[in-house]
Amino acid sequence: MRILSGVQPSGALHLGNYFGMMQSAIALQNQGEAFYFIADYHAMTTVSDPKLLQSNIHEIALGFLACGLDPEKAVFFRQSAVPEVHELAWMLSTVTPMGLLERCHSFKDKIARGFSPSHGLFAYPVLMAADILLYQANRVPVGKDQKQHLEVTRDIALKFNEQYGEVFVIPEPDIREAVATVPGLDGQKMSKSYQNTLELFSEAKPFSKKVMGIKTDSTPVEAPKPTEGSTLLALSRLVAKPEEYQEYESSFRAGGKGYGDLKKALLVQLERFLVPFQEEYQKLKSDPKKVNEILHEGGVKARSVAQKTLEKARIAVGI
Ligand code: ADP
Ligand code: TRP
Image (cartoon, rainbow, N blue to C red; front, side, top):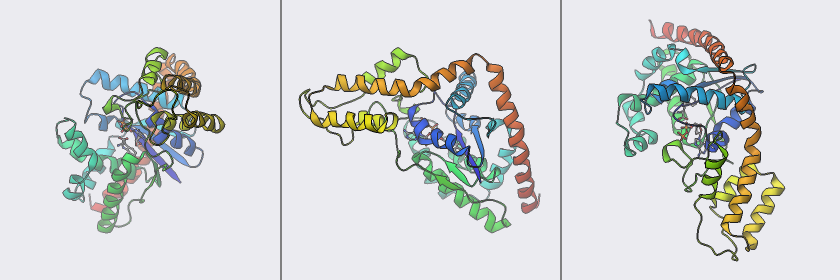
């Protein structure tokens, strides 16, 4: 089984990225041939500062490795180490109906948030399909917001195979319904673009300030707190041990504790969860050469797999 996923270097990694995608990707590296990459070409659709893009790429690499990606088990690389992806994206674009792309929510959301409607943003899902099909991936662990992009990938692959013969494996999305969407500080989906994230590798002070600033309602201290839709409980459920979470939830039902105290308790749970990752991050940070070597080696391995698929596609289309 081949597993593949990617993350855009468009900002710092956060709890939504970890629980939506990275945790399952890291677990799956023991179950098949895993390919994980930093989608730097994709990030160009929203990041136009070259220095920022470079530092984001390095940060994502450090973060993914610190969270447990093992380069001995998974091929870890930059998307741009395999420029063949663009040739395949072009081939795929010739079988992609415009209407399929026009329906994509992420394009419409980005335009609504003020990004300019560039061709790159519009064609984003075709490049993503090329990322996946180039490696003949069977399973693609992603968060729920990527579901539509996976459907587009499957549609494109089926169309290409129908037209040119069985060239591509049809991939299956791997979405953890139990996690669904991790809420951010304001209760909306946690996302870099909403500035409501809890970062995996931030300094202690700003981190605790953010946790203490999580949006809550105005239930008085002594009254029971609503459990439905609570961001505090949703985050605790992800990071606390099961008994600890039960106790935390009971203290909501019982009343008598203010949100300030409940946030302090959550902060302890979050910090304890993140410490091992942060320690690993600091170790890796002191050896930037090693990180670059890992990405370079991964790029070489990924490229040789990609070239084989591209050759197959070239023959199929008559080029
Ligand atoms: P962002 O929305 O912060 O820009 P990305 O688009 O880079 O995040 O997402 C990288 C991966 O993390 C994707 O698989 C995405 O589905 C997942 N992800 C991002 N935010 C969340 C969230 N709040 N809950 C669950 N999964 C998420
Ligand atoms: N679009 C994905 C995101 O924003 C990133 C991505 C690019 C990706 N190519 C991919 C994810 C291929 C999985 C497979 O999160």
